[in-house]
Length: 363
Image 1: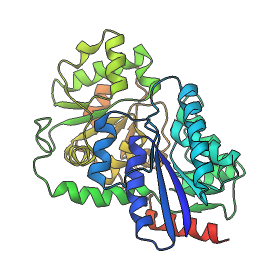
Image 2: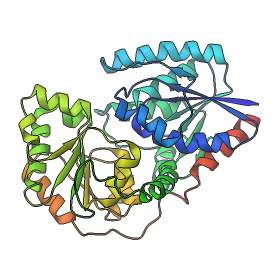
Image 3: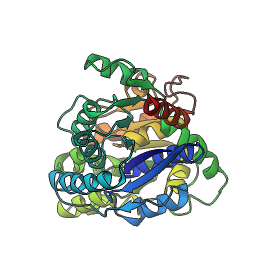
C-alpha cells in the first residue's frame, strides 16, 4: 500500500484536490493522508468547499493563517515536517503556488521524500509575485513535475528540467469544471444570492496582493468596476483581504454601486461563472473556469500564466492602472467568443496524475 501525503490550504487547491482525491479513492493500492494548513480560514472559503465537493476530512488541520509570508510559511514548514516524520509517506503531493505549496515542498525535500507538483511549469515571469517565487522553487524541489499544458512543459525545459520526471497530464481544473459544472446546472436557484439574471451581469473577483496592497491599483480596479455597473450589474464576492484593504484605504464607498456578497461556495460560484456575461478577475483559476464555461474574461494583472487563453481571444489582459481602460475592456468583452481550442487535455488529468505517481513510486 502506497501512502501519499497531500498538502492543501487555499481555495484553488480544494478544487483540484476534490478531483484528484476522488481518483485516489477509486484506485487500489494507494492511501491518501490529507493535510489542510488552514491558509484560507474563512468558512465560505474552506469549510463549505469540503462539504460541497466531497473532499475527504483532513487527517490534520493546522489552522495556520495570517501573518507575513515568512511567518506563515515558517509555521507551516515546522508542523508539516513533524507530520511527515510521523506518517513516513511514500510521496508528498502539492498543488499550485501558495505558501502551503512552498512549505510542503521544502519539508518534503529536506526529508528526502519524493515530491510531486501538480501544475508544474507555470510561469508569470514576475518575481515580485509571491506565487511566482513559490512555483519556481517548488518545481526545482520536485521529483515528479505534472504539467498542465505544452507551454508549462516548455517552460521547464528552458530551465533545464526535462526527462521522465516531467509528465504532461492536462489540467485537473478541467476535470473539476466538467464534474461540478454539471452539478451546478442541476440547480436553478443559485443566482438568488446576488439577485441577477443569466447573461446580464459581470462577475468580478479581486484578491491578489499586487492589486489589493497597492492603493492606486485598488482604486483603479474598483472605480473601473463602478463605471461598468452604470450599465450592467457587477457582482463581487468580496475576498476578506480585499475588503480589509478597501477599509484601510478609506475606499469601501467604491463598492456602494456594486453587488458585493460574501465569498461564495464553490457550486454557487460555478453557477455565477456559467451565467455571467463577462468575468473580471486577478485569479489564475477563475481565468480558466471562465474559458471552460465559454465566458469572456478580463484579467486585471500585468501578466498571466495562461497565455494560451489570451492568444485564443478568450482572455483580455489589462494592467489595473486606469479605471476608464478597465471599464472599456469589460464593455468590449461582452458578447465575444474566442477560438475553438483545447489546450488543457481531455478532462482525465486526475486519473493520469494518480497513475503517473504510482508508476513513479514503483520504480
